[in-house]
Length: 146
Image (tube, rainbow, N blue to C red; front, side, top):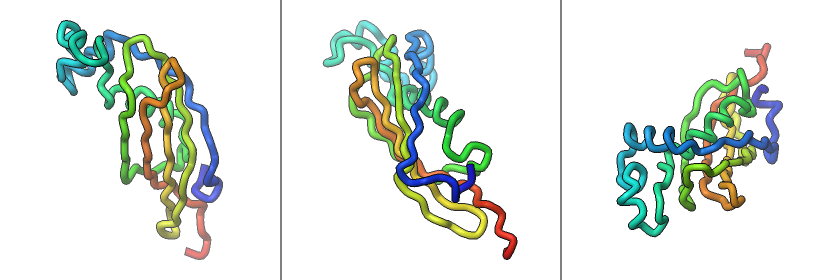
C-alpha cells in the first residue's frame, strides 16, 4: 500500500504468537544472557518467580507478525526509529496478541513519506505487556511531474 493509501487511525490485528520456552531461553542465552531469562534456579528467587522472556524476544515475536502484514507491504522502504516500552513480564506458554495502529503520517519528499505506527502487545490474560512506536518510510505513488 502506498503512503497516500494509508490512513491515520487505520488498524491491523496481528496473528497470535506463542512463547516457546526452548526458543525463549535459547534466544536469551545468545543475545540477552541475564539470569532472569536463562537460569530457572535464579528466576524462582525473583519477584516474577519463574523465567521471564527477554523483552527483545517478546518484541521480535510480534514484530515478525507485523512485518508480514504491515500497512505498507511492498511499498515499505525502511525504518527510521523505534521506541519500545516493556510493561509486564512475559512467560513461556503465553500466547501473545497484538494490534497495530497508524498514529501519524508526514510527507518527506516527492518519493516517500513517514508513517508512525503504534503496536500494542498483550499476554494470554489480555494484559498490555509491551508497546512499540515505529517510524517507517513508505513509497509514495508515482508523481509524473517530478
